[in-house]
Image 1: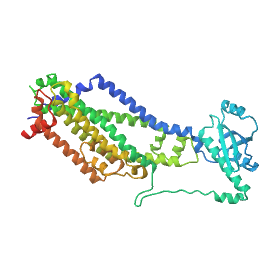
Image 2: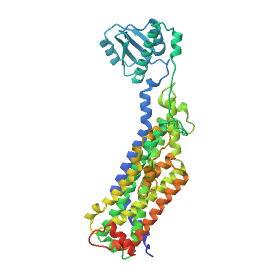
Image 3: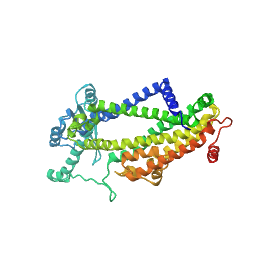
Image 4: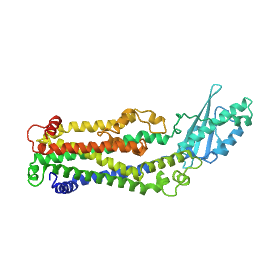
Length: 464
């Protein structure tokens, strides 16, 4: 049989590769980086929200132990000062030098602020707030908004508008735009529709292309080092490529799976301390409040809940199995091409030049997977995944589908029938490439002399 002995090549290649120091050290470094990125992705949003908790606190909560108010514009009335104190904290009308007060703000460990109101002309006012570190920028923004609202209110009251009528003018108007037949705009979905294809295609391309290159390098090294001639005394040429491709496929899938496990474990370990706490069983709005330390605002909590829900759907068991299948098929397709490239050279010095068409093919595939997303503005302006003809084509071309399909599956951009069709096209391309390899590999691996070009390989395939 032409494939007899591939098991020995498989075991030898697999063991030799995982025992190398470069593989062990590289795997450890990647695991550490994945763990750090996973933990930071979970903790940073909570840290940022906590640092800005003053800006999200409910009106009526005391944010400042003392507010120094310097009304240079003489616009606010005593009742306005009383209202500000009721909502924001103790207000002290100050005529002292602002430098002395600022020195106090720098030295204090309490939430304090200095608000200075200036008047430029008849109707132009400016509000400048200096705040202590303990107060935070969010609380200072809220104080600014409260003072600005009081100035507007006092101006209307001075013009004869009663306080009751002023309250009636405080209406909130929101405007949305939604294309007919589509759901309302979702910022979380829009962000995922835009960034997920870019990130997923780049990550998968690194694994598929890198390990495919290792197949070519391994075959070229053994051919130029005369190891292949020794192997051919006991196994057939086709068994060599099958054993090496499958061995490197198992190595790549194992390392990829290990990194996924490390990332998931890191997220799980840091979940109780970050925004992913909402993903834990029984978590709800209250858990989000505890994470951020913020009360009274639910908009951010709703967005986080929506994000967690979207992530749960994207990484469902069915989606994970489909992504693994496409990853394996994509690796086999590119690894078989790399095997032909590695066998086509007679000198290791020619390998880099011979790999250029292979590299160009991979680059084109990656560009087709994420470039249409970058230039697709509708993916940002819509709560749904929006595709264009080039992006649709990338789902069915074998050189781009391994990078484009996983993100489409995660986002639900394709129907089950379309996913099945695209996967079948990729599987057919793998089979055709395997047939090509089986026809010409024996002649290629024994070839010595000038580097074979792809056209020469196709001519050899027709003769078989």
